[in-house]
Length: 616
Image (cartoon, rainbow, N blue to C red; front, side):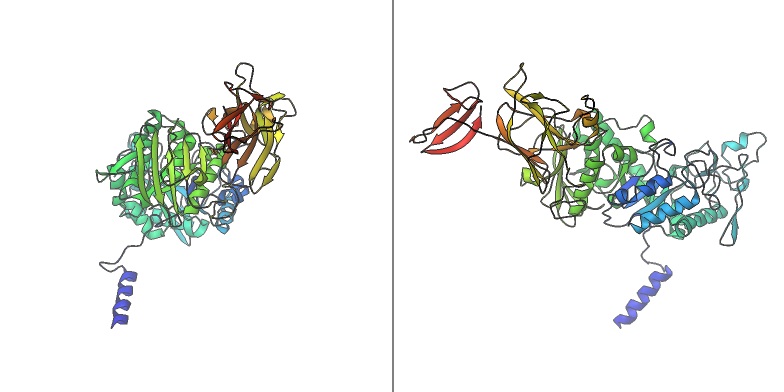
């Protein structure tokens, strides 16, 4: 009897019978991947272009971090060269400023073979003609010809006022008007048939895995449901450009939850938080009671939320993010939803972003992960996020607080304005092992700063004394502060000396390792967090640590991203440790015993045992 019931249920579901569960063509549940916007405005030109061949050449690097890459509309448009947002062709011509159709197919296949899906920017709200406003081309695919005409253009389109142009006779627009091309009448069955076939062509012929629907405010969301159910994409996300949570949620619902949406409410909350230097704006109340990350990810829609800091449009208009880029990316990469990293942010911060993605992957953080907000203060957002393989705690803001239950040994990455802790090991995007997050250990590493004989000389540095499993040590380093403040010295690390011109050109082009804040004081024997400064981006502003001018041992641990300074006494006069009570014995920086100085090195002796070495 049970077998019969199960068979009937299966038949009903397959046939789409009343009560059947609808297939999901929006976005995978519990998706752990990160998305990359693989272009920026006019990125088809210049030496740093993102043409199809460029992306293909970077496939090994990009596929190591991203599971989805969004590329521009690949069909030929009216503005050529251009970005493709005024499309003319859908099926028959995919040769653009970004490359040929053959190069496009090679790119898609190359990434697919490496486990990364490509989604296209699908522009179907509007369309341009071949030589005038309305002469759309006839195109044949799989033996059927598809063509649209004036009867398929919204009657409210501005072409109705244009002299010498065909008059549109479609229904009124179901959304906002776009005056750059002709607004298509999505209530029309022929338009629906053309759009459904086009989406199917993109998936089944070119090999795309899904769509980023452009300007979905231009037509009702119910039509995206039609197109997705006809073509069955793995991913679908709409650009519903609105900061209002309810408006974006209503559009997702209008699609029958058959499409995700870009989380503009989250983007604008991030903009406001960093513009006002108030991290409390990163938190909204779920159901009016529970602190959760701001935006669509906070309640009800995390599976359908694609979070982002900037895109090709916002990066060049008044809504461009102008705050701490890496701290903002730390927020979305350590939160539910599917983060979409902007190309310019990635290329300028490759190492730091790779580290955050590696941690996200190691703990199995996904688009529906649970979040427990630990702090929501002006200078601190802190939350614990639970993945399928572990947990992480992310802190955003200038506060130097640490989460309960975690130590410096649990710091997995840190940077200006952010820090991430986890008990889960991280290496190159996977859990476990001794590899550093985001890449291999540097072959060359130099200590620079207020060194005796070399005061911040970019052509002179002390190469690591030893490097084993990411741990570098420097023995008997003599710090010698400047004449204006001889008791205080500063230091950091770089991966290349500037032996050519001594003007920091090569040094600033190299990767550097420094403190998380400017002139961070470091206490002897206490590990201090390390930040990596990527060469050519922000290396010139690499932050230094502040330490006492003394002979010291330095240990840099790139597995934990910490540095430890230990004061050293070498050549010190004999000390009588046979004292019954606690005694402080002082030395100057050259190791000669002196009486109670204002500063120097001293040993605390108790019961004949040297308890600890201090720098005062």
